[in-house]
Image 1 (tube, one colour):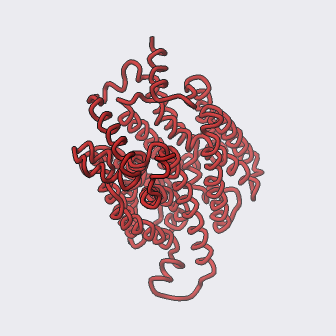
Image 2 (cartoon, rainbow, N blue to C red):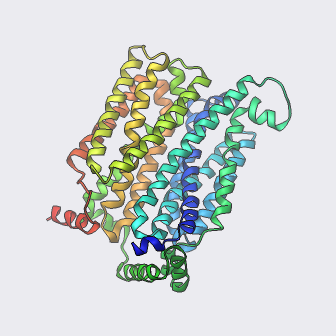
Length: 465
């Protein structure tokens, strides 16, 4: 109780809000593109392949951002990498809003992707490293919640701008061009505001005490911990950090694929990839396109996308509440099972040509709800728990890379699959991938609820004997 009372909530709140803004921008930048696709395709005369590049260029940037963020974080510090990510977000939003050609538009999307990739690694890591241990899990969870809020805000702003553009027929100047004549530009303009707020707020927060200790800047690390948790907790926490650094031996990347590590690494890589092959980001990126195929007008389709975003955010709270009560496996099994049924139902509706109107929105919303309390948050929890301490950072990075590569594949080739094979086959393919994820969870993934990291590490050793 003494330690809880000593926590400086104001300082801690500033830190968490700032870092979770990275998650908000992650979600916003990922989802804002969904409302722009129909406009950009017409204005720049994009075919299916170019449309795929427009969507997936940010994902290629994400992969590059993830690849460099770990090394940059160790060299420059967590705070400076967040500054770089914030700057990239702002440059991307501004450039996309005012570019005059499809090539530069894709380039600016690539820059935004670099920011997303860096934020996806550095921001939750920063929260985990700076938060008091008794609050760490809860505070890191806010990052995932911020992503869903960012997605929802993107959907809402896209829908609002589209509705305003539909009724605005007169006017002139930049404002009319951005928010009426070429409304997709206004959708990107909105992202400039949170990017600049993030950039400013990062200057107000301290560096990670763990990174400071790693660089032998012990007094600075203790000072940061003191400002957050008081003197007594600062000294004890710094001692734990120093002991951890002293006991950590250098490991090589090839060691991840040997002995006890092979099964958990397989689970981390495959589960992360399957979470994307379930079709979640196809719906986030191409929601209006899918709904237009079901008979919605563009404005109605964007409105349906807002509903999808609200469900995505609200059902994340289900995971937050139940993950430490019922466990990881039950949430995954129930959620993936529901996702499979939803995808099959959507496939049947499109195949039978009875998907016109709001009926197709029902399986889509059910899928989003199931994903949001299972695949989405639980995947990140599992890949952060199942690896031994000496390998955890490298193994999580490899798993995260798998997720982003799968994300890029879906973004790049989904238009070709949707236009070539049709919506029915597309949803069936997603259902098959989800079915394998159900099998993987049922047969291969151990329950980690209530177990210490050392107990999980011991489990893998025993499994390999």
